Image 1 (cartoon, helix red, strand yellow):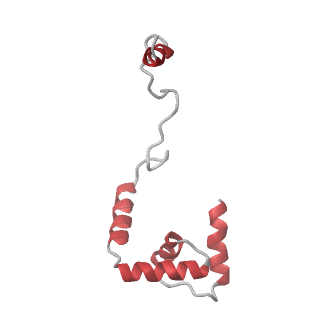
Image 2 (image 1 turned 120 degrees about the vertical axis):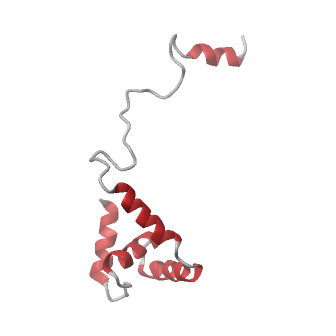
Length: 101
């Protein structure tokens, strides 16, 4: 008997060897309904894709100096409309605490 025949016989009768159907599928937008998911996703992609290389590199360097990721630093700019500074110790600490949640 070849290895291929062993693999074929490993599945029970009536089973195609695919993933189990018992696991509940959770869509990309979560369990709470679709709401404005596609509007938010489109706006997020529009902001992310229209950044020049120079601006992206500036944000990466600034985020690294502050101990944040590019995502965290950029989100702060988009949400609050200001660039974080080294003196913003409390806000930077709050962002880092959110990582653990």
